[in-house]
Image (tube, rainbow, N blue to C red; front, top):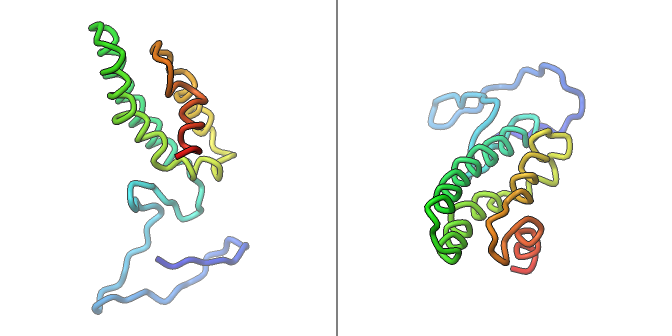
Length: 131
């Protein structure tokens, strides 16, 4: 990875980076340890990915509620499947203040109403800080 700290966005010609005689291709974004990093360091791609993944898992949580599964099982599912996705890269959300999907992620966090006493909305953030 080549990091360029110049503020002016101009088309600089870089000499190709070679590893074992092969040039390394330039990409606009890549995934590293589950976090999508873009060349301009906006976190829009990452927050969209987290939002999509959390909504997919919230669907299954709604199905559990629909089938009248006990709240302890729903809480365990939420903690392991949904909360882990939402809080896995929560540190990047602060840096995506201009991202329109940042608000959508927080809506997902605060919009969870499952009727169990913890891990809803702000309590998720509070438990993350306390850990």
